[in-house]
Length: 172
Image (tube, rainbow, N blue to C red):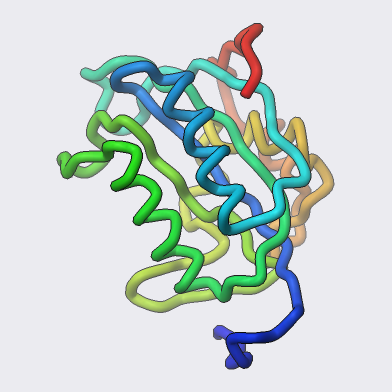
């Protein structure tokens, strides 16, 4: 359930965001996403970049993935609108579900809140099955606990079979 708060509140909310790209200059897209996110959040940590094979629809290029954590003054739905606008600004084009994309920006966590509205489910509903999200997030927030299960990110990652993510030398 979302909190109703005045728009001018000085409260900040702890958030985690996942980034992915598998079309075009993938690293440049991730870097541009981080730069764009700085308009909506104070970034406190940026993960290393990982190359990961595609999941669900495997006949497409490999992804570069990263994660950022920080704080925001935006409530969940305005934050979602901001990141979706940023995706569009960075060249994301409509594609099929789980298809290739120039940039993908997903909100993973918003404080320890659980949000379930048609536009947004938090924490991210498929987080626990996605090494491409968990591996970079575990580098910068290993002790962050999933608000539904109480399990730490590092523990969820360790429970996944067959690691396939490859850390790159380049950073964001």
